[in-house]
Image (cartoon, rainbow, N blue to C red; front, top):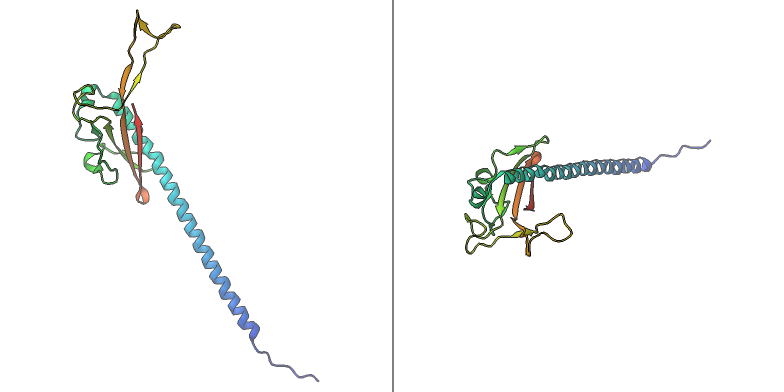
Amino acid sequence: MKTIRKQKGVVLFIALIVLVAMSLAGVALWRSIGTGVLIAGNIAMQRGAVTSSDVGIESARTWLMAQGPTVLNNTQPRAYVSSWDERFDATTFNWDAQGSTPPVTDSAGFSVQYVVHRLCSVPNAGHNAPNQQCLTVNVAGGSSGRAAGSYGIMPLSGTTYIYYRITARALGPRNTVSYTQSIMY
């Protein structure tokens, strides 16, 4: 008769090591998926903030189109500066005291404010004032005939438009902040 040999338990020890290694791999995979979802959520919120800041740009454009030259020549208490500000920094600007009021809230829950800067060097003065330097575009006059627009031998003058810089800030859920600038005339 054969005698039964004693088991040493080496297989059990190796199985426990493999079980621990697989558990650690599972936890690492779970953490990696959680981090990926968090990053994807942050990117989606940032894109939402940039999209929402378009609401601020459009609100500023609508406000700008409704104003006359008298209003646009003078700095307003909120949301409008009649000259460029070389020191303007959107991250340190006091949006609560000087941004547009009331803030526009879009359907995604973002609160959007804007500030408009007229791109002229001298504040509270017209674009033709002495020492005034404005960033402008001159749009030539036109006619429906074959020749360029003219009156007799004098060409029709064009219209001069001043450029404006609109800065919009969108604040959203999860402390998402987005700053967007647009230049328009």
